[in-house]
Length: 242
Image (cartoon, rainbow, N blue to C red):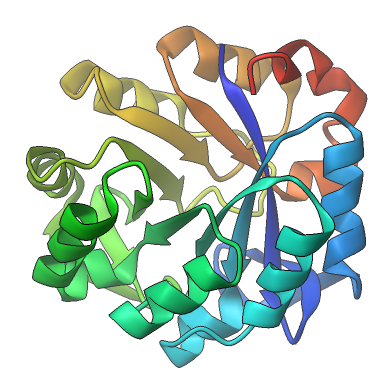
């Protein structure tokens, strides 16, 4: 059964959400990210997708203190992304309590370094971040769209040992207009053994059910929780498998 993974995005130490990755379209939901994380844990969820948006823009980890506080204040399994561009950043993330690190832009900009991370830390510790616009990979906080195509990108990293991938459709993110079911279905048809986590636009329990039916390993939910489109109680049936 699909895993429910709540998302917390951080700017200036606050819990925020952007629309389509646009930093000028920021909405602050809480100045206390730890309390938000604890509310997810209290609901029975066991994983958290934590993104340092300041880090994504700065190209180095900024909000490691937020990561540390959530790691110390909850038992959530945290996958952390945003600003992880070097071995130093990777070590900061793990030392601050991350269980896994998502390699996004760096997986495009410096693939050999990410190959080294996979070899050193193991494929279970590194998640591939594939942020897409159309079928092209976007980088640097989604401000740039590369010429790299999604399917060859995934195939390359699967050959290097990657097991898990968070794929975010930028066109959907933050709009609450529905997840890219067709996109995820096409990915899983091509790569059936990939542990694929859908992200972007999820707005209802019915979409979660559809993502489960097509074989997604997990679904990252952010704005839908914060805006009350999906209630934590509604996902209880999925929690047993998280």
